[in-house]
Length: 316
Image 1 (cartoon, helix red, strand yellow):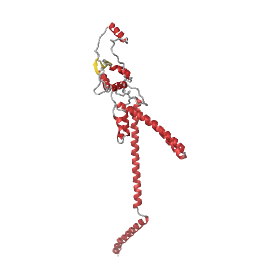
Image 2 (tube, one colour; image 1 turned 120 degrees about the horizontal axis):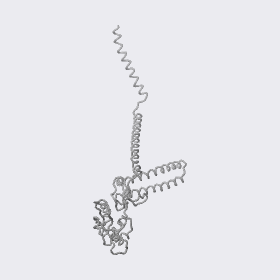
Image 3 (cartoon, helix red, strand yellow; image 1 turned 120 degrees about the vertical axis):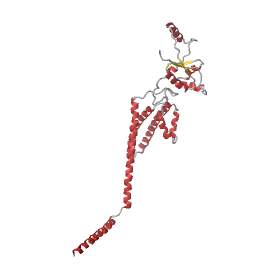
Image 4 (cartoon, one colour; image 1 turned 135 degrees about the horizontal axis):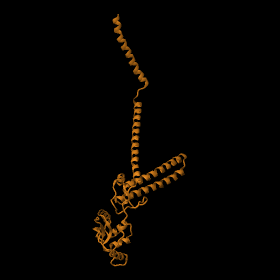
């Protein structure tokens, strides 16, 4: 016996406090369809949005649909055995577009993809934590050589005292920085979509104190399971994504090693400078050393003479 199958049905009911216009727009955004196609779902008839689902898949679809504001429900599929003639008659009835007895059909729910297409340079779509870190690493790897080239050019222009060259280089550097900033914002917006948050929350990065830890929140928070109001989940992470993400471990390790080496070098320089300053402030001169040594030598000679005197007396 095969496993029971389920379907998701909708009869136009909405959740409490949800406006019908908002629900229509949410459904259109979820199904990537126009509002005119969604209007057919609100004609008062019971419509099957998705058929032939397992219980887990049905729960996933129902969770995504409930976020749009509609009151859909899960019903078991009714298994009906038909003979060949019944199947042919049913097919003919379905093929007839103007038949008043044809059941309502909504092809909107059937077009929901399993995974969303990746759009690196757009505000639509979702990306997970690893892909967010991998894309950020690619952006950093592209930015570093460009920054290095501009630094060398800037040093050359400064040495030649070219004012016009410095102005042009500054303008080009500003637009490049702006381009990298926009791409970084697009990555962050898609990461927020994967969590289920609005992309406008990226502005929290500009708020004092909050902006210091909000990027860490975006990297840690897991994405929603299944589809949400921003679309289907992103595709699974590829090997390239995992490799690029692991490069952050190397970068962070090099940063800590460099910080430790720099700290140790600074402490050593501070210690040497303190020794030099204390030597300069508290050292004695060469004359003072001679003065102190000579009395010590005289006292040693006197002591030797005193020790020799009793010996001479005994001989006499």
